[in-house]
Length: 476
Ligand SMILES: *Cc1c(COP(=O)(O)O)cnc(C)c1O
Image (cartoon, helix red, strand yellow):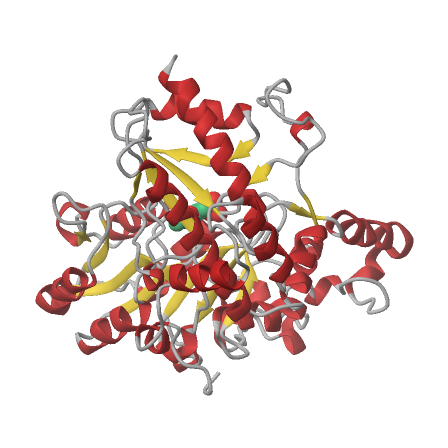
């Protein structure tokens, strides 16, 4: 991907806030930016709008929590949970069934059959190119296997090789629990003490998000004792996007390996893992990639590590395919990421990933990103316009957006906090109106707007329901 530049670099210079673009569009269309006519025009000009129809979006009437007296039961829910579990693509069932019927018809021969669906023996390999494109990597750097948390362990087995001088892992204070447990247990397994070997970057007192300068300062001061830096590319609570390129550069200057958990980043923001020289990464496919619940995870290993001389956990599927079935117990390891595969790949799960990636292949991450910049800016504008100081009647306390306002530091997700409000009550009232979103840590509601299937109309409807929910929650 040598011709691609970091998405951070070009946009930082000379690109304006997407709210300015929204305002120009409102002027062009001669409509009020907050009005329904503007929303209609925005959806009409959206080049991705056709892709919404590729997905089953749940109907209000099918969700038990929805109060059918408050909404039109036949309308679609507002699907703002793509950061947790994506919606089901319409073709997924058919493609999984194809593999099942192949099994019924061909039995064992399905492993090599190339006529229908995926040949089971290489069902993961057939998806690598599309997956690699999503994360900005070159062939050989990506493998599709296991689940994210398992893969995080496998990466740490290779990249975390502590010595008395260099034994630390640097993560974020609010790291995802699974990552946190992986760091702790890998440190202990290596005979070190997590209370001294696991160190953190965290927001400053009074801040909700990390500051890049603090992360870089931490790496600079502690770097010589850090073996691995592993952060979330997009923070799962706040939606903050980190400058992965600068972190990698800074970590490498200090001799550290740098990896990222991309659960919330992949298919959300453009990634250029190869160009950024990231050492390793892992992610799951059921969030923004919309694969089946519990679907496979993925790894990225930079091809500078292609020789694969790291210690690792081995299995027969990491063996080169051409001699795998010699069964002579002499490991002839695949180069690159494929060498990390331990077990044979599951075709039903791969059929689901393939279905999802085929939709991504109809567009580009750059187009997806362009739409998400507008969507988040739009929601941010509407929320701050109406609720920054509470509503005009003073009956509703203010709402705070804790996701960075800088468009380079956020992706699809907007995290809202409700000081002086009962967040659980607001969340419940949103649920009654078919707004599918997530509440975390008892204070934040996360709104994830995925450009493939969310529309500006979704945002507009959300604002109506939010208003109702806030009023209902206050009077509770
Ligand atoms: C969703 C998520 C995971 C999930 O891990 P699984 O192994 O797929 O259960 C891990 N890390 C982060 C940051 C996540 O958001």
